[in-house]
Image (cartoon, rainbow, N blue to C red; front, side, top):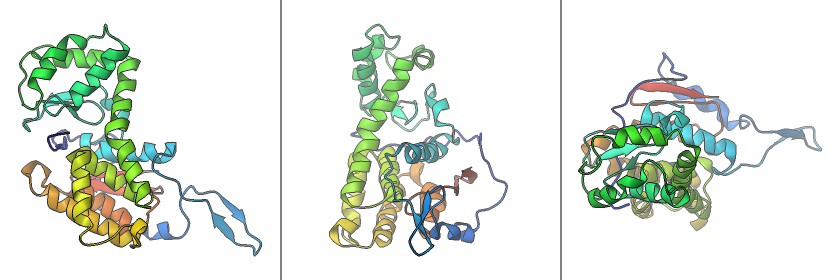
Length: 284
């Protein structure tokens, strides 16, 4: 992606698990005992053995990742309700749409509609491909208005289009981020930190953040401490976010990812309590 991504923070409506209290810093202390949801079995000395940690591409962990990102991008844990979302949020990137904020001005929306059309040539969005190619790299709606938003929402009713959105999300953002996390030998929380950075800044933007963090710390694959490394990565992420006004609210790091990290929840185990843009959430 050639242009940094922008969170859709103007769409603020808390649809699920909103909490009416402030997060307590001590709320996560229990995470360090036994991962919530882990299976256990007796050992020969009468103790218990926690289940092995799983990566973010485990289906249950991936579902958690999608919910956390949706809270930041759409002010809702219901990420599946976002397939039909589309609007211009006046960020210079044209239309923003779908489950991961595909943008008409940054190329990923074009890639998505091309992929959809490869599978289903007669789809309702295929006729906009020439316009999407022309407006790529700009904030223009030329050739898209007035009916593109309506047709996008129509397409969202098609399971083929929904599958295309998930496939492009995974291909461009999720899979590369998780792969990099595994290569760095960081667990689900760190893999999520990479993924969330890729969603906002593009995959190459995430790689740039990681590169700057390497000047201050090393990931476990290079002999470093995992917690120290993730703090360094998140520090650089915050610096990058503050470079642009639309990113200047860093709560998706400060009151979400950093909360999990300080609690020692490196496996991103539930329950998770966090806040984004002042809205509070709980994932059980």
